[in-house]
Length: 466
Image 1: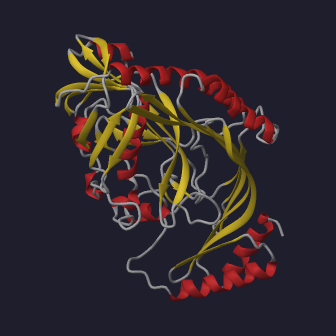
Image 2: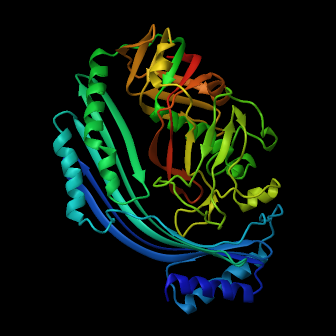
Image 3: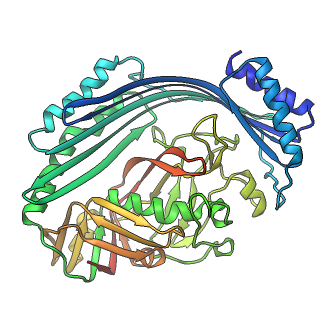
């Protein structure tokens, strides 16, 4: 039995057995992955999977997943799930927001399909990176993966969404050594696309330029004297900041305290909607509908139509990320933020593509208006507490700013700041938006989900740097 027939059967059996509600995510996926370290191929893998994940509601909720798509297996698992859902008594009333029923199909078109290149051709892409960069980079790790996934979303209300999405993902880790000093930088790229996206990333030139800058930093870099300064951060740094200090704390399950034991809490409470915590030019969105984005989808894993969510608007907390359960609890509609890694996991509240909206300035103008400050182009380290309040970012490539001009390289400047202090310090936002890919982790068991994060450069006034 294929995954579509198995899904239809599971809904039919669950409703016949007395389920109040049923939803299903079914996947058929092919994927490949390759990694190379200092010219040596570490691994090359290929996998295929097909299965369904079924969630039923009776007295409580139950979930099961399986790749055994026989009639006998499905019937046995549905019967067990119904018994479990009948026995469970929740500590709180769990309802789902009322949402529109959709019947849709959509697919991402690839110019160079993921299965059009042989494994040897994909490995050669990494070999080409190695050849072009080995003379400039002391340590080199290159990774490349691709996948194509068919996903079917069904529920007992009548929604039926089918999608086909190819993805390509790559990252590099480069290490530079100068005497007793070392510097390392990691960066990843991804898209819902075919291999035509590889050329657009232009990884060879990016790696060589970064290596030169990091080496110069080790040779000439100065340590910043701990003090209050103006700071301009570039898009790479903007991306990690908005993902960690805006996206995560505005996930409604965290806001409601549901993620405390797994992924942490949030300093944000339900009554903080419309609270001013940043400068008036701080606008942050989460938008899964961006074409070719790594976090792309048009309907979430509960069948809710995707849209742009304005998480922060003019410095105010504007909207939480919701699935149907958190939306019901807070008396709103879901905004399509339920995602699962695969059929084997339940959907939970997740980000997609989280970014700061551009402003009206050029990056050079942000720098020109700084008398004494730091420009942080990339980061080598970050961390943030469980409530997403206290955070730290360590620069990789960074420069001093003196009287509106970039000066000497700065060796690993450190920004330690709270979320409100950070966003309140923002006084100007540039228009040079860039996006970077990542795999965002959350949940128990852990679910890694593809996302973009990014935005333009922005300037913060008078923050502590060391």
